[in-house]
Length: 278
Image (spheres, rainbow, N blue to C red):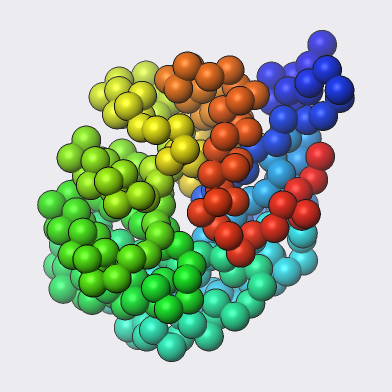
C-alpha cells in the first residue's frame, strides 16, 4: 500500500508538489531542519520556498537555501515588523535579489489586525517592494489581513503604474479582494486554513478560482491542516492541504499537484525544475 502522503503513478514516478511558503529559519523547524527536509522529500515535496520576514535574518535564510538544492528563498520586510527595523529601500532588495536562490520579494503587505498604528509605514514599505519587484522582475509575496479595501486599491493602482506579478499568500480574505487579485493575473495561495472545518466560505472562494492561479503552501510552522491542526506544521503537510483542495477543483490529487507545481514555476520563473527531487 502507498502512504496518502506519497502518491505514485503506474510508471513509478512520485507525484511532486511544492510548498510555496514556509519559514524554515523559525526555531520550531530550524532546530529539526534535517528531519523536516527528509520528511518533505518522502511526502513527495519537490521544492520548498522559505520566507525571510526580517531582513536582518536574510543571511541565515540564504544559507539554508544555498545548502540544499530543493530549497529557494524570498526576502522582504513583513508588515508587522516594519517598525522594528530600518525602512527597506529598492536598492536593498535589488542587491539581495542577485542571489540565484532568491526568487521572490516578501513577504510584504498590510496587516491592520495587530499593527494598525504602523499603517503609513506598512503602505510605504509595500510600495517599495512593488517597485523592486518591477525592476527585478520577481514576484511579490503578499501578506494581507484586515485591510481588504486598502490592499485592493494599492494593488490595482500600482499595477496601473506598471505591471508586476504577485501571489496572495495564505489567502483568507474576502471574495472582493480575491477578484481584484485574480483580475490582475495574480495567484491565490491556499494554506491549511482552507482545510479547517469552519472554512466553508473560504473553500467556496477557492472553488471559483481558476486552477492556473492557485498555489498551495503550509506557512509552517503555523496553520497545520487536519489531522495535525494545533500542532507544529511542516512542509510535508502541504500534501494534506492539497488533498482537501483537489476536490474543490474537481481534479484528482495527482492532477491538482501537477497543476499547482506548474503554477509555482510559471510564477517563480527564477526557480529551476532541475532541482526537483523525486
